[in-house]
Amino acid sequence: MANNNRLDAEKIVDAVGGSGNIASATHCVTRLRFALHDEKKVDKQKLDDLDVVKGSFSANGQFQVVIGQGLVDKVYAEMVDAAGIGTATKEDTKSAAEKNLNPVQRAIKTLADIFIPILPAIVTAGLLMGINNILTGSGIFYDGKSFVDVHSEWKDFASIINLIANTAFTFLPALVGWSAVKRFGGSPLLGIVLGLILVHPDLLNAWGYAEAKEAGKIPTWNLFGWHVNKVGYQGQILPILFASLLLAKIETFLNKRTPDTIKLLVVAPVALLVTGFLAFTIIGPVTFGIGNAITHVFTGIFDKVPALGGLIYGALYGPLVITGMHHTFLAVDFQLIASIGGTFLWPIVALSNIAQGSSALAMMFITRDEKVKGLSLSSSISAFLGVTEPAMFGVNLRFRYPFFAAMTGSALGAVYITVNKVMAPSIGVGGLPAFFSIVPQKWAPFFVGMAIALVVPFVLTFILGKFRKQKA
Image 1 (cartoon, one colour):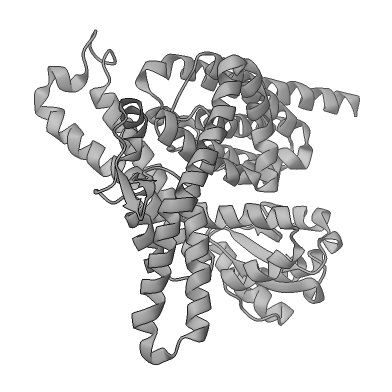
Image 2 (cartoon, rainbow, N blue to C red):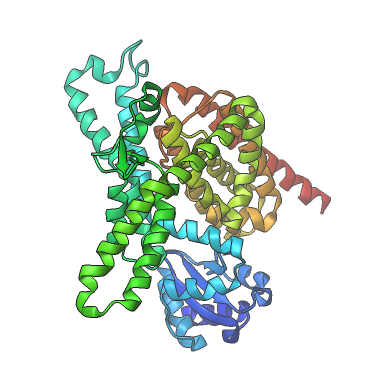
């Protein structure tokens, strides 16, 4: 087996342009990740012909080759030895890959680097909130009553689930602060503290801001005649993002110029004090307004022409994944949740997952290639559970028409659920289990949308596949 792994590794190195084309290489759980000097030298056909390769794609400046869990470790070890390139960490490869990115791609990658590490906490919270919604939503099990209304002994159990689920969203600025300050080169611990400062209990809760404003009861600080709103930023993304960037820059600046003997007394206190004041006086109010403007833009489109909004986002989400730009919409989802109590974008993402899986599954019945059959089945299951990259890059994009069929099914399903105002109170598990994170009162239209996303791509892919065979 070791010899086979060695041979596979040598062939992969040759297919990506040889060892001289590899700036850096690492691996994750399932994929080899390359920072290449010139991606035009990659021979994708050679890669596709290798049994060990399940797919390949380029994203965020990295060329990634899907191998599979477990086996990727062995192939990587052989590849490092065969190519003489030396091992590298993920951060090394990311840094090398950034040289291939333009400014827009770097900005998108930065957002991805910030949000991806906190997604497990957010997805878990979304799933738990879904369970709480099932227990407390009226009309699901009993007419006009919730499960806990009829079975009161479950009420406190549901309350604990809700508390656990809400924590990640209540202290979201702390999670983002940790990840963002780390990404910007500062101390993650200071990022956590900064996030907690923005949601301190002494501040007016952000979710009560609108009501307090209408009642004229917003508390303020009087800074030598300058009245600053004493408001928290629960669930807000932009304030903590910009504040984290400032904190990291100040900390880095002070670390370079402060003697080691007094760093503990100077760096962290000054960085937090300056950032904290600016966060409440300038950064917070300005970005809070920008966040609300973004919310109004999206809610305006989906309120006035929901079918158009659903059609565009449903069709384009797949292509956005290819570019990596889909990560930027996480900030919009968080902003919508904080502003209106839910997001109408995330349910569309779930339908896109399903549509990609459905197209990949159809390919299993069309192709005669045993490797493609196996990849189609495994990748479709993955997509149905919310992870679409294997289906997209391993199957659908390779044959093209399955990808367009998936876009069509996703768009049509999205139109239906947006017209019926399907909402998710949180970001949760994607794919088929996504209904857990949908408001229970909107399960029925969401299930119809899921059916559309399942049937349309499968049928279109099957018909187009048969037509192409006959034409050939």
